[in-house]
Length: 536
Image (cartoon, rainbow, N blue to C red):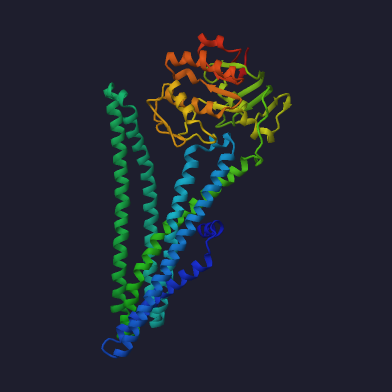
């Protein structure tokens, strides 16, 4: 079982001791049946034996309680230890993988595997140990019934087998329907999301409003029908399980004495064993779907790790400073995205240009011209498929990328705003407060304990906050991907005429994607892109 292999491989918690105590717990649980059955047969016969049975019962109950509690505690520790190791290992590999993999795999898929799948495995640990213990109880009950009466054992196994087969048949149908309902509910939730995000649009368009609601209503009705169908089968499962118990008891009491020589004590013993049997059997059967889902979760996590390993380049662990930047040159650089669904390959072709230290370089071009792709090549987030990159006149090798990227601080159009200033040592709090005032954010957020108190800001304000983080990183090359696009006219002018010139005065190199032609004079040079090429 993949789940057992996962715990054995990932957790350092002693497993033999946990398995041994789980086994003892199951045996102690099953032995309670023998003690209770023997005590029931001795009622009114031998007070001394009853006292002995009572003490045996107490001792066995203490043993059961201790061993089961210990096994479940160890299972919890083992599960969380394994989850911690896998999460940190995969997260560590994830941060060292390539951007192309992140973009191809998709955030939702990666996030689901690291969060939901690992949580499912964590939840299954206690159920796994408990189900294993209850499975031992089931076997002991069946062995006890076989010891009392072979015909009784065969009748019990026959009826239980039919009940279990019916359960799994209905369970497969129920799981299929619930999966179908889950997909339909996703459509329903998207409809609700459309109401919330598109409220202004549907408020001024009655036909669109009514059509959207009609669609949501139809989907909701489909979800209802699917869940009702699944619920009816669940009721059938529940009733069949209860009926099977009564049928089995009736078979032992009415049918077994007619077809086999059996005394009253055996009938009572088998009936008590059946009472003990059904509860643990239900736990084992109900745990089975959880184990199936947990096994799939284990496969998903290891598949994610395998995919990351397959595309990742090994980074050097030696902490060295990036080179002192003087020049950067692209020589016939090309890059193309993987072809999908037979479509044409998009990318950039034959990019050749040179950047000097202290320059302000503007990159201009329409949507889809390749500006963002070029920035990712420029910052080392993509590897070129053709051509060479030269830093200070030396060709850039793939092993140099970890240091090459350290030249840059970047604010991309799809930037993420961290609430903490990660990786910045000896933070000057007064300096941060001064920057907040300069950016007009002192009333919107504050900086305390190495983090900003509020990042729920407008896009323009978030970009200004990102600029503060970028300045504090104090790298040699600054990348601004349409930073000014969401600023008001005052801050737009301030960005071009003050901030960029201040960076240049400090010896920083600035590369900015811009559409503000009125400020093109600020740039030392301008590169224009069309259809993945530099045109002038």
